[in-house]
Length: 184
Image 1 (tube, rainbow, N blue to C red):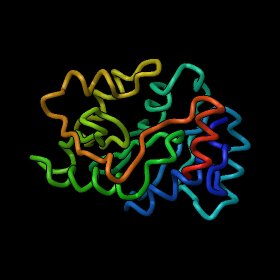
Image 2 (cartoon, one colour):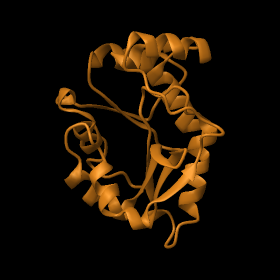
Image 3 (cartoon, rainbow, N blue to C red):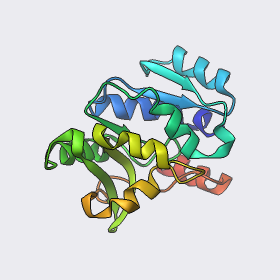
């Protein structure tokens, strides 16, 4: 499973928790799927301990199911920052930049819809204000996550350029992993 792949001496799951915590996210909730018990054991044994680890038994259905599981029950927060485990080139600077933009949103964090941008294209991390969470959960299907909801509300989405501080490349193949090992 991708969550257990190591880049820079840490699993991708540990790395993501560390990034989110350092960017000011608290609590950090991690949704696990493939080989859940091994991923859980690795996170529990690491110094990068999320406050909550939630199982997604339907993980094979795509990231939409993981997003729904991660947002149910809705967290008691003004906003949620969603980060994918398989993008090790996204670090604290990008996460903090997206959070800062959310704080500046009209109506504050609860109303915010902010994505990192890479060359003008939307990417991760994504900040979802609490007012949007029911709609995001209702629209999350397959491998699309919040994409449909963000498209429906495109006029309200703020894209914050992060290509100067992050690399959005994901790990989908052995070649991608080799590239991440060289750069990570």
